[in-house]
Each structure stands twice: as C-alpha cells, then as structure tokens.
Image (tube, rainbow, N blue to C red; front, side, top):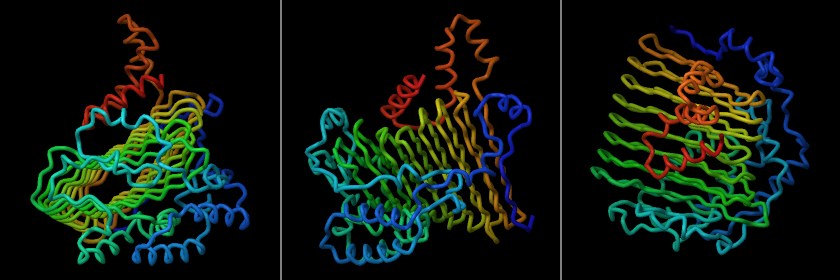
Length: 469
C-alpha cells in the first residue's frame, strides 16, 4: 500500500438503471461534463467590477496589525483569479450567483427587527454580530466563566498576538486556503478570539451568532474567528449564521481552531442563512496529542452555501469525528468539502455526511482522508449517504483516500437512494398516511445526525424538516 490511492465514488448499477429513465434525475456523467457549468461573465472587467464592489464595503480600521494584514490580503487577492470550473476544488459548483452580485456597504444595525424576541429564552452565554458588527445590546456574557476570553484580538494579551496572527494564516482558513480566505483577510475589520483556559470544564455551550438583517443593499460580510481549546479543557461552541427573510448578502467566514493536548471540543456550525444569501465557510482545525474534536455542521439556508473544512491531526492518540448534514430544496446548492490529514501515528477519525435533496436542489460532497508517511496505526472511516426526494435533484459525491502508509485501517463509501418502497408500504399498511410516512422516513434519515445537538436546535431542525415535506 505504498502508493497513493485515490478512489472515486461508484453508484451501484441497479440504482443507476433505476434512475436513468427519469429525466434529469441523476447525471451519471455529470462529473465528466462539469466543464459545461462555467462561470459566466468571466472577463477581467467583470471580475474587477465585482472585486472593487466588495472591497468598497470594507469598514475603516485604526488597528495597525489589521491594516498590515489587509494590505497583504489586497496585494494577494488582486493577483488571484476568481475560482472557476478549471479549478479542481470548484469543478462541481458554479459561482455565478456570487460573481453576478454588486455590493454596497451594509446599513445600520437599527434595521434588525424582533431579535430581542428571538433571544428571550436564551440563558447560555452568547456573542452577537449584526451585519458584521459586534452588538453589545444583544450579546450576553454574564453567565460566561470569567476565566474564558471572548473578545476582540485587540484586547487579548499582547504577548500572544504574534502567535495568534501566525496561526490564522494556516490551512483552509488562511492564505494557503485559496481565494475566499485571502479575500477575508483583505476585508478584515475585526479578529475575534475565544480562548478556553487549561483545566476548565464548561457545562454550558458558548454561542456565537452572525446575523444578517433586512436591507435594501446587497451587503458583504467577512467574519474572522479563532478558537483555542486549552490543555485538559472541555467545552462546546455553537457558531450560528442567521439571515432575516428579505436579506440579500454574501457572507465569507474564516475560522481557525486549535485543540491543545488532552482537551475535548464539541463544535457546531449551523447555517440558517436567508433564501437570497450566498455563504462560504473556511475552517481549519489543528489537533494536538490525546485530544478529541467533534465537529458537527448542518446547512439549511442560502442559495449557495459551501463549507471548506481542513483538519490536521498533529498529535498521537487523537480522535476526530465529523458529522455533516445538508438539506436543500428549490434551486439551492449545498457544497461540503473536507480534508482530514493524519500526520502522526496512533489516531482515529470518522466522517459521516448525510445529504437530503428535493425539488431542483444540488448537493456536493468531496471528502478526502490523508494518511501521511509515518502515521502508523491510523484508523479512519468515511461515508456519505444521500436521499433524493425529487426526480430533478442531483448529487455529486467524491470520497477520496490518499494513503502513504501500510499499517492503517481506512474505509470510505457513498450511497444514493430515494425513499424505500418497502418501508413506505409497511408504514402505510399500519394505517399511516403516505404524507406522514414520508415525514417519518425523512426525519429518521437525519435524526441520528442531530441527536447530540442542544434540544432547542434539535427541535428547530426537526420542524424545518416537517415543513420541507
């Protein structure tokens, strides 16, 4: 097993035959023909107009370190082409919906309505950003342990500032992450840090809300967050993106996560963006010795949403579990790209992705497991399951293994199906109406993915699933 192994998902023949007779149900050669899905208006003038409009939304800053980073970002972004179908990681996802937009500075936070009602029953610590700006009025950190730091990098201990800035430049959320993380750096207005100190166990999750409000402008928001899980600590963090119904915006978020020795971090990423929004989330996690990272994400909103997740296991006796759920309807595109790299021996990882599509929705999953030289005794598994509820929805699934070591145990796979006829017949034979039977099977498909979620989030997700049907 010394050579690199790269595997492309294969669809069982019996399922392919079942689907091919349905017009536009599943495009067997979609990957091969992906060059037909090119980004329109790719002329240099069009791209320059787009870039100029997004840079015009930047907020002024008087922080020297931010000014330095923004200049670096601008110099780099002007030399980068806009991602297109000629880029390997964007072959399956058209970015027309982003490139065609022209942006203006966002309006005042005063345009937000009814958010006090939204937070009325919330008792957990939370920090809230509205239209890209920190909201002291909506944030509530009174119940947060006083040893936890959650705030602007400008207020973080100065002796740690250089290490923080170096860390945020790495991986999928850094400069090497490509176009969108670099654009994020060019547009920085703040860097927020969440640092959980060593030997601290937090009972309640910490909530980070990014809220986009009703606006007559098409806005652009660039959020930057660093999360540090201290040695021997235990914590939960919920990053939630919410858009009010009429909001039209582009959200470009970059998150860097450091899980230090012997610590445990449960991280949740919730996408409830508005129907008119487009969002890119670039996330990089660095895991140290004897640590555990549980990463869960669910995407519900947006015309186009994409998660780029990179995890480097840079320790021994580590464990990393990734669970992702994508639920899309109408003409939504939901894209999940991941990379889990085992760089040292004796570690485990697992990834389970579930995709639920209806109407004309498009789902994309590209998951890569890398086992580097010297990473003996690696145990890793990956599986993507897709449920298609419409003859017009489609999915592209690419589970990939790159193994450069012989002493490993790795599995990967992908399944695509519609609702099981036998299960439907059984439920209906017990007196359950067809509509209710579909709901039961659909909720059951997703239920295992949200069981670990806080109860309020679980109830909200199940309600949205019922509304989908």
